[in-house]
Every structure is written in structure tokens, then in C-alpha cells.
Image (cartoon, rainbow, N blue to C red; front, side, top):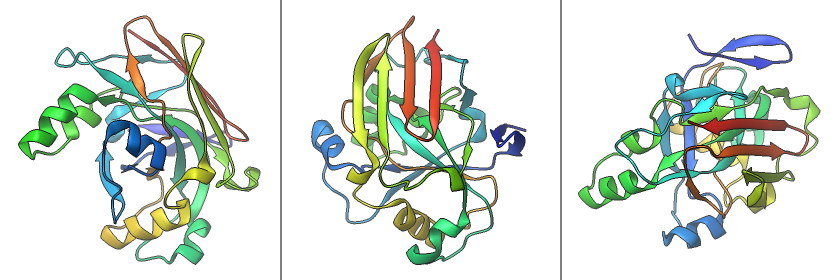
Length: 216
């Protein structure tokens, strides 16, 4: 069973619910259309790798991209919650990377097929330890920064989300029950790009922490 740290405790992880196309500039850089509803997909707990770990790019891809994201830990069962009450269900925040096999994703899109083999592979979700939600003043006003081998690639702010964290929790809980230990990834700002063997990725979010992984 995969676990994550929250305030010194090991928390068993359930499903990882991911949101695509939630920053306008990222939508533009990929040439996508702005969705009228949240774009939702899921990664399994087996996709997790802790800070200090190693990312392994599958041999069926030659174009793996980094995407820094604010991760939200669900602290209690949430079903059909309102946006007004949604943050009451959050127990913590962490730094995450949604690694994406962009070439494979493109092939799947053309064929009208699901994205899982491009999004849910082993080590596709590097994740830092969580900090308690009470330690984050305003989750909609946090700076996100990602460097690859010392080069700044992404530098954004959660204020630029198209849909807020509360709105995302409300929307996803309408489709399926969010349970204690589930993780919600909230989208990535612009600046995504290719990573290769030997790269060192350092992702940081103010008030939340830092995540460091290397690429095998």
C-alpha cells in the first residue's frame, strides 16, 4: 500500500484525481480549447514516487513532459459537496508533478482512446510530503516554480487557475466519491517541456515545500 507523509504520519493513498487544462496559458501553449467542464483523469497509487526518488520514462515514449501542480489531500469522505464547503474536506497540500508522455498522449487523442498509458505509468506522479491545510494561508495565492537541471521551466501562481480548488473538489465529487487519502492534482501553469535521462527536477510551492527527483 502506498502512503504519504502528513504532519509526521503515514497516510494510505487511494486514487489520484487529476485535472487537465486548468491554466489558460498552458491551454494556449498546447493548442487546446478551453473546456466548459473540468477535464478529469485518474492515476493509480502505483504511479507515486517520493521526493528524492527516481523517475523512469517508459521505453515506449521519447517525449516525456514535466507539469508542476499543487496537490490536495482529501481528509474525509466528499460526495456532491458544494464549492462553499469544499475546502472543509482538505487536510493537506503538497508539491506534485504530473509527468506526461506527450507523444503517446497525442497518438491516443488522434485515435479517440483514453490517456492512461501516457499519464498513469509507474513514477509518473512524484509527490512531496504534505503540510497541514491550516499552514497554508490561501491556496489560491501560491507561487509554483520548477527547474530542470537548474534551468527555470515553469513559474506560475495558483491564482491563475481557471477553476478554483474548491470548484474542482465540488465538480469531481459530483462524478464520484472522494475518500480520505485521495489526492487531487489541480492543473499546471505554462512552461511544460521535455525531460530526459540525467535531468534533475526541483519543484517548489511557497508555504507547501519542495520536491526533488532525478530522471533515470
